[in-house]
Length: 173
Image 1 (cartoon, rainbow, N blue to C red):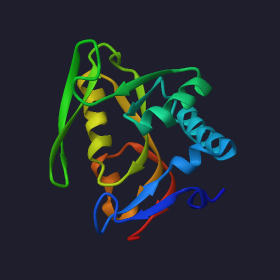
Image 2 (image 1 turned 180 degrees about the horizontal axis):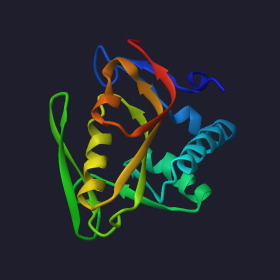
Image 3 (image 1 turned 135 degrees about the vertical axis):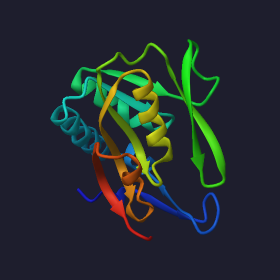
C-alpha cells in the first residue's frame, strides 16, 4: 500500500519552509488505518514488545490499537501537568527552545521491553525523550515505529541502535 496517497502535504504549516505531513487522512480510511495497525502489530510481535508507549497525541491514536491487537498494555507520554499520578519527566530540545515530556513513574516495570509508536520521526527529539523516560524507569526500548520518517533530518541516529520501523519515507521534500 502506498501510504503517501493518504498523507496530506501542507506547505508553510506551521511556518515556511516546513511541509507538514498530515496523517489524519489515514485515520479517515478504515482499510488504511487497519493496514498501519497490522504493520505495527507485526513489528511489535517481531521485537517481542511487552508494552507500547505513545507520546501525545498521535502516538495515542496509532499505539492503542496496536496494544489491543497484541494484547499488551499501552502507556501514555504527555506534556507536564496532564498525568494525574506522580511522574518523571525529561526535557528535550526543539528547533527553537525546549519542551518536556512526562510518564507515570509506575507505568513501566524494570526489564519490560518497550515499543515506542508515534506518527512521525523528524529530528528524533520527542521519540528520544520517550526513550529516556522508559530507561529512567528501568524499561528497555526494543523498537520505535512511525508512520512517516523524514530521512533528511536523521532522527533515527538520535535513537541509537534500537530497531526502527517506518512505513513511509520522505527525503528533502
